Length: 372
Ligand code: SF4
Ligand code: SF4
Ligand code: SF4
Image (tube, rainbow, N blue to C red; front, side, top):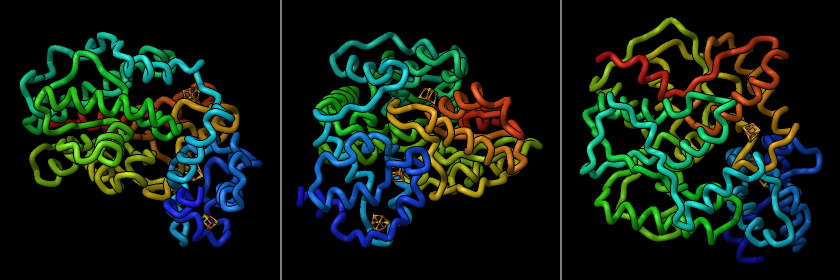
C-alpha cells in the first residue's frame, strides 16, 4: 500500500479539497469525495469507500486542479485492482458491453466490418490501420439511442481518404481494453493489449489511427506502459484532420451553425488535444465554448459502462443545459461514448430542458463539410 501511495504522490496531499470541488462524481454522490478516498488510503483503510471507488469516472478533473500533484485516477485504478474481490461495480446494460471485451479476449469475434460502404477507399496492404474498437458493438447494443454510430468510422475513412490515406481496416474488431484497465482488471486488459499488438505486428501495421479517444489512449499510453515500446505510432483522426486543415491539404466548407463542444476526457485531459478539435470546428461553423471546457471540461458522467444511475443522468442533463445556454445549434463531441451517453440523457430528459441542442459527432460533421 505504501508503494502505491508513493507512486501516485498520495502522500503529498494537503487535504485542500480542490479535487472534490472539481469532481463530477462528488456532484453525483454525496458520500463520494476524492479527498476522502486519498485520506482513507493514507490512513491505511483499504476498503473504506470501496463502493465509492466505482463512482469515479477516472476523468482526471481532480488531477488538473491538484497543486500537490496527486495522480488520483491512477490511484483509484490501483485501489480498484486491490478491491475487486470485495466490491464489484454495477454494470450498465446488464454488462453486455463489458462482456464484449471478455468475449473478444477469448478469441470470439463477430464479423463487424459491415460498416464499410463502397465509397470508402480501403487498402488491405496499407501499414496504416483505422482501429474501430468497440463502436460496432455499441451500435448493435444501443441502436435505440443512436442509430447512426457507424457513420463515425465511415466519416473517419472519408476524412483519411481526403488526406490521401487509404487505411486498412479489420474485418472483425477486438476491444482495446481501456475500460478493463480503468476498472483495475489487469488480466483482461493485458490479454487484449497483447492480442491486439501481436495482430498488428503480424499485419505489418506501423500506424494506428483512432477516432475513439479511449482507443487512442490505449494505444498511445496504456500499451507502451504495460508491454513496453510497441513500435506502432498512434494518432487521432482529429489531430490529423486539424493538421491537414492548417496546412491547406484539405478544405472544409464553412456553415452558418453555431457549435459548442464536449471535450472527451481522454482527448483533452488525457492527450492534450484541446485546440485541434476547435480548429476543425471553427472551419465548419462558429464556435462558442461552454463555461466548463477544454482541459477543465466536465466529464459526460458515465465511464466504462459502469454505475449509470440517476446521478449520472443528473450530470448529463446539467451538461445538456450548459450546452443549450450557450445558444449553440449543435453540441459536438469526438467520442462515441460521450455521444451515446449525452444522446441517452437527451432522449429521456430533452423535453424538460429549457433549450435543446442537436448532438453530433465531430468526425461526421467534418466529413460532411469536406470540399472535394
Ligand atoms: S486537490 Fe490534491 S492536495 Fe487537495 S485534497 Fe485533493 S488530492 Fe489532496
Ligand atoms: S477522476 Fe474525475 S470522477 Fe474521479 S475523482 Fe477525479 S474528478 Fe472525480
Ligand atoms: S448514459 Fe445511457 S447509454 Fe450511457 S451507460 Fe447510462 S443508460 Fe447506457
